[in-house]
Amino acid sequence: MNNISKTEFNKFTWHNLTANNEEEIRYLRDNFQFAPEHVNDCATPPLRPKIEFTDNYIFVVLLFPVYNRKTGLITPREIDVFLHKDYLVTSHTNEVAALKDLPKKLARLATASALTLFLGLLEELLLSLYPMLNHVAWDIDTLDSQLFTGQERELIHKILATKKNIVDIRKSMQGYHNVIMEISRHYRDYFGNIKLDAKLNELESRLK
Image (tube, rainbow, N blue to C red):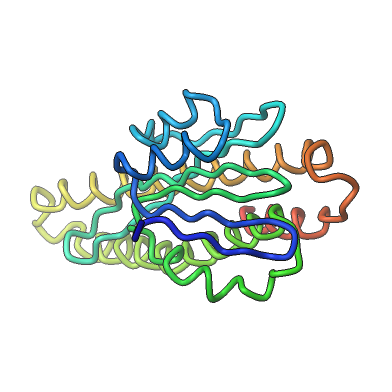
């Protein structure tokens, strides 16, 4: 199972699935009691952010914009998360660079909770958005410098592509904001009286 890794921490286990093929989906069905519709979301990503609370776990769908430097286009990629006090399950297609080094980066959280690890994941994703925002800002500056130079026809495609990139980034960031707000309201129902308000407020401030 090359696309499935398990990392044992003191209080929980992190299951990281880096593909959504038949083997990975069967792993979810065989090892957990997830709602069929949530497993189906992993198999056929709906590509829209959401968070849903069940009796036993929290299901989160995140979008992350992947920037192609050659084309200058952004394509959203989905990250599915199952959050429980005994485990964190992440399912994605391993196209988000920020996720590839997470096991090493987050090893310091070995004694923390699954929720703390999830918040660390969110923070890494948000931090990796900033270089992408810089690229979009540079694209806008380049377009501004080319206006009124007689190249307006050629610029139409670039303007539309940049507009799409901005919409995709805003959509992703709004999804993170909603997830953080909902987690803030309900996390004690799943993880008890742990103190994470300061961390949640810090993450929320990054989105302002």
